[in-house]
Image 1 (tube, helix red, strand yellow):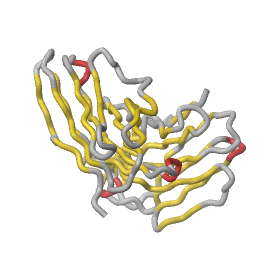
Image 2 (cartoon, one colour):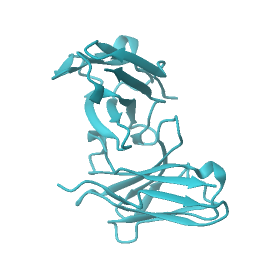
Image 3 (tube, one colour):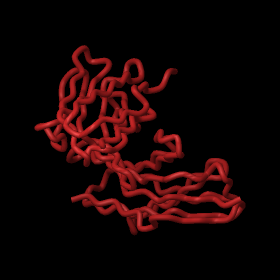
Length: 114
Length: 115
């Protein structure tokens, strides 16, 4: 089966600019996650969707970050305006409804804010 | 509150040596799941193993083995006869199913296998 697809692979922007990341999960996976991984740290959950509804966005900085999954399939994560501390790898993952069976991760988007 | 600790930040071994990566998960839950993921330089997180809290049998998969001891909250991962391709960051990740109901990660252990 095809894995979790993410694009772009790399992105460099200046601070205060906006950026968007795209994720296409494994077909049939109801749950989609966005994680932020800062260099040298473990991934941290930003937002979790089940179908097209938000389950958990408690750690999403909502003043600058937004995410949507309009048709319950692919998802977009946006940052506007970006700050230097947003430099990180943004990982998308998906799982079936049986979430404790584990997640499948994409290759991530490496964002550098200069 | 749940807490996962990977005390080893970086480990270096010479090829063919055995290496054990430690993970301690502190929780009041009696039922939980623990995962190990590998993150090679390419950046993708690769699933290695899933274990539930009721299963304390050791598991072996090729050169990989896992030892889960509920009494000490430890879920350690051993690589036997390490190879250069094992060089990666390894994450222990509990699944929190009573609170946030999602996977959360330790800080990771960077393993370097020297040829």
